[in-house]
Image: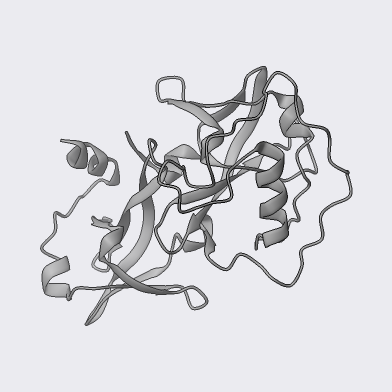
Length: 239
């Protein structure tokens, strides 16, 4: 099923024994646009701790109840490795998370979700607690992971001119892959208008300057269906 990433942030995240919080941000692989990790806002339940989960942690998305169900209990999540508040994820942090939850490190495995294989740990007996001392980030960081929150608002360019800016993303909750970027048209003023483009049409990105570059010219990209309401896009794509 298709969802907007902005919509996902409104869902409640439910452990097997209670609510964990809401999704604060997503970390996306810049090479294939798969969602590798989600960052949770757990301030009401677990203040002062940054929690990251792989999509392989999720059992299902309950659209009616606006809930994302997690395979772990709250104690398992509470005892997970501490993660620095630095927006860049270090390789050491990623490795410790993978080892703690049992997420597979081989990201080339075709049966994997974004962050690793489906966890095979014993969920009845939670893993031993890690030290409460935050893990220091070494100099080497996971440069291939990008914050979805930071990319919203990026300028989007055809290969011969400006097209608009990123307004949202659309992902598939089966494979946790971003399939489309939602672009607010450059012609939007008082009445926003939107295009939806496959991520396969993206040529490159300048992550520091905030620019995405498409493979095609304006004359082709602007022939795509134009939506007056962003909420109409998924319904049209799902037909």
